Image (cartoon, rainbow, N blue to C red; front, top):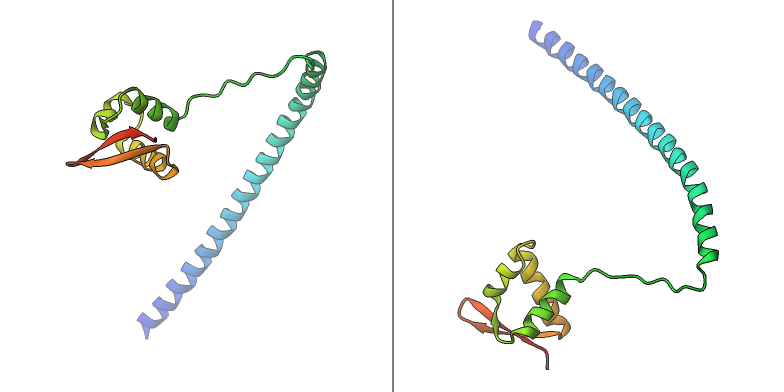
Length: 133
């Protein structure tokens, strides 16, 4: 009987502490939400004058077309490399792109092949890469 009472007390204590943790979690989330809202207000207050300044500058520069320089994409760089050396082995292209993993390069090459931008031919454990005809 004593074990049963001890078990009931432990279950009750566990439930009590579980409820306390939920309350603490709720309070923390409310504080985080309030902090995000106040931060958003500060950013919005700073953005309004900046937007007004940009609008004034846009009116002055309305006659000048905006030139947007796009960064070369991985796919574009791969196409350029394959066009420069048709028949290049896929395994030989990996060292030319040290900022990317093999998996990223393989996915980009498969994407280009699916799009019809390049052709891959199986060569041993790698592929020969050719620009699309």
